[in-house]
Amino acid sequence: MEVLSVKNAKELDQYTIDEIGIPSIILMENAAHEMACNMINKGNKFVFFCGTGNNGGDGLAIARKLIIKEKEVKIYVVGDLKKSSFEFKVNYEILVKMMAEIEIINSEQDIIKVQSKVKYEDILVDAILGSGINRRVEGVILKLIEFINENANYVISIDNPSGLDGDTGEVLNASIKANETFVVEVLKKGYFNSGVKNYLGGITIVKIGIPNNVKEKFSEGIKILDNAQYRKMIPERNLYGHKGNYGRVLILAGRCGFTGAAYLVTEAAVRTGAGLVTLLIEKDIQPILAGKLVESMTVCYDDKDRVDELIKQADVIVCGPGLGNGSSNKDMLRNCIFNSKCPILVDADAISIIGEDVKLLDSICGRGIFTPHPGEMSRLIRKSIQYVEANRIDICRSYSKKYGIITVLKGYNTIISDGDLVVINNTGSSKMASGGMGDCLSGIIGALIAQKISLFDSAKLGCYMHGMIGDVLGKERYVVNARDIIEEIPKTMEYMLIK
Image: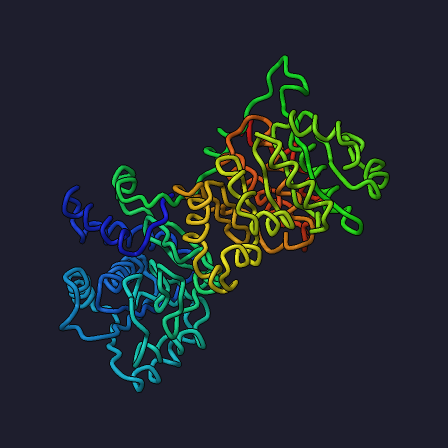
């Protein structure tokens, strides 16, 4: 699925009309048919608030189809009929001839009049402004949005909640808080910034007949992949494969008081199918972890010859979980980076250490993966967390481009970029918001790299599987922990392969 700016989404529609030859009124009719089919079983009483542009035209066309299906429908038109779009006028005139119940809202007094009628409707449909808005909501529309948010039982927005900026996710003074949003063909960039989900509610993608090759023509290199695309990234196990075929993972993690992080990242790598996994740790905590990690090896910093050998042999080095910034840990991190040629996954404390050292950053160019959460990213780019949350896609892509690395900007709808393309992960939820989740993810991605999956695909697949397991487990649990995820990794990979 493509994710576009509002401008490109409009140009996509216009190209379909002008160059492909599908009239605008036909596209609107297609949209209305699909949306009405999605709405019809949600209730019996509907009230529509329609602006006089094409978003309102969509609303009128949907209302017509529900009336034909003998639903109770009230329609309120917001704005000046003299300034309405052609498509709006066509649908409005049809409804007038059908003797539909239509009223005009031009003042706050008109809003007060409809209050008693709205409270008892099953579904309120917001078709006031759509995604074309680029200015603050004021006047009658502002009051109407506030009224709807306070009084409606269940709200469905058409294409975009009225008052929400589709490019930035900014609330333009006020926005409808929808329970569901029916989005036409493509998602907007702003939908993946922090807090926007509170206004979108659930999202339903509505196909209206725009060919896929046309959508690709307007692609901005921002995509959401489906399960089949992720499945293709998983290599099947060779009949004659042995542990040497599935890669060597070296993990630099943990310190006194943070042995759990080292344990989780190592176990995740083992369970994701890496052939040989070795944890590199300080001498003081080696006994603790050696007794727990029965399917992986441990080596301490003091064993210099062994460490040097492991660095040279590694297919990937995962560094950072629970590492801290002590001098010995920093020195070992530098040793791992400067004396290796393999991919380096950088997480947690290692992000801060490498992010402040230009030589280290330069050394991982072309072979690095950074996995920051918003706070870590804000420190990397020296901007506020709020700025990061409001510009997640652009920040992730530009940071990857600047340093020649893969960036995984974690959070709800994790953003993954190689500097050119962006993939938005649509799995995972707040039920996974607990300590150790990031450590688990690093181990998964590291093990995938060791199995000769590309860095970008490993990051994409790792995030997808991590979140998918959380979603499945979350259906029956209040909270999902990292240990729960790790236990399910092998079963999930096999399930994805056979499905």
